[in-house]
Image 1 (cartoon, protein in one colour):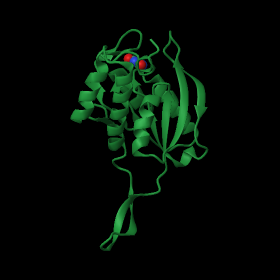
Image 2: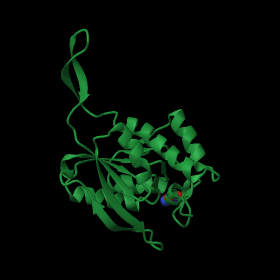
Image 3: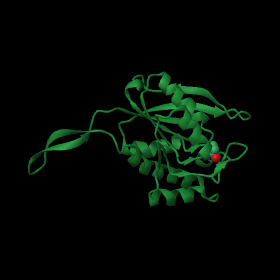
Image 4: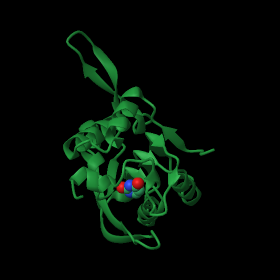
Length: 210
Ligand code: URA
């Protein structure tokens, strides 16, 4: 049904996601679990990074050994909940650059309104991995990817924790070239745009603001 969707169904990811969904999970545990899942998802989203060969010397012999080719990465956090996935991703790709896009949901239309945009200057030459735990209506994801494409970015991947079918359809229609990585596809959105069953407001749960 979705052409560019990868559901990361690794048992560790699924187990940790279940712990995150539980309403009694503390802020500290929620934050730690999101970071751990981001580490595991980083492994999946970087699976097709191109490799070069580099001559090295082991204690016993010379060899041509694989290294990640000089492809430049940029992690793009959609504020504020995207920050909850940044540290885990950076643990795996420590030399990646980081950009931030601030978007808030207009409460009546649920449209994404931009209030912040800061990325590396050479963003157009980088593979951008956009991070936001919740793909709900798809408005924020589409707006963020629109902005990256306006800046000339040609290769983009989108990573979330949970996706709603409505958001997946919207994002795929707007940006069919962008692969989507998620840990689960949930049932639907409620009338306020929350993912059901979901896990509530990811920003509030991550930062303890409610
Ligand atoms: N954003 C959230 O944090 N939670 C949802 O369920 C939907 C959007």
